[in-house]
Amino acid sequence: MVVANWELKKILVDNGSSADILYYHSFKQMMIGDDRLRPANSDLFGFSGDVVKVEGQIKLPVLVGEPPRQAFAMINFLVVRATSAYNASLGRPGQNLVCAVASAYHQKMKFLTPNGVGEVKEDQPQSRECYATALKGRNALETLPIELLDLRDEPQIVVNEPVEDLLSIPLYQSNSKKMVQIGFSLGEDTRQELIQFLRDNADVFAWALGDMPGIDPEVSTHKLSVDPTCKRVKQRRRHFAPERRQTIKE
Image (cartoon, rainbow, N blue to C red):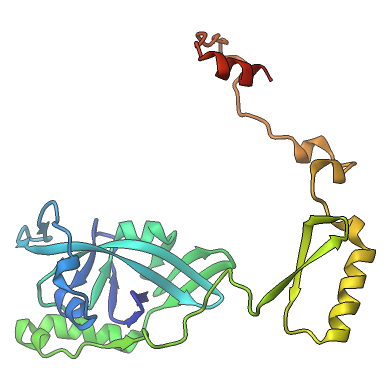
């Protein structure tokens, strides 16, 4: 996963956990100040009943998967100062936020994205290494190398932004409100040809409902999900100031 522009490996997908955990050694390597931590409501309790102290909690942006099938969520991590073979643990809350389904048998996690179903596969050698290290005990855990890749200087994909400067062109010389946009870097001949083409076909643009006749009301009409069997109740009359009454009347 990419967490706050850091590529984070060795993440335990834990269906039995009710918390998303970021271990303190990973938190410090991400160079996020302790002052950004918010107080946590309570400590964590392990399977054996032992108490794990929580340093605080922090909400971080998380990106799962590979383009174009990626899921994004703001996940609230509990930062825990404890030795672990993993950098983080993705519990049920985080899995729910990215609409994920994990299968231990298939060693894969699938999730919903705007471009279809995305998936991440388990790294089996690394998984075995983490499991073996955990079995060796505390000393082995403390010497375990942490893998973090800093992506903060990588070029970030900017969405919903034009790839070039745009030039606004009025479709009608007599109406400056009906505008379209074309690329600013077009050559002069291409630009004039495109402008003339758009103006010759200005009738295909819809600026109001009246410009779109012939649409089936089933498509264009919004219907409220009202149960017809429910008793209708008249709303109590409200009293407004004189100027508001005139506006309501109009």
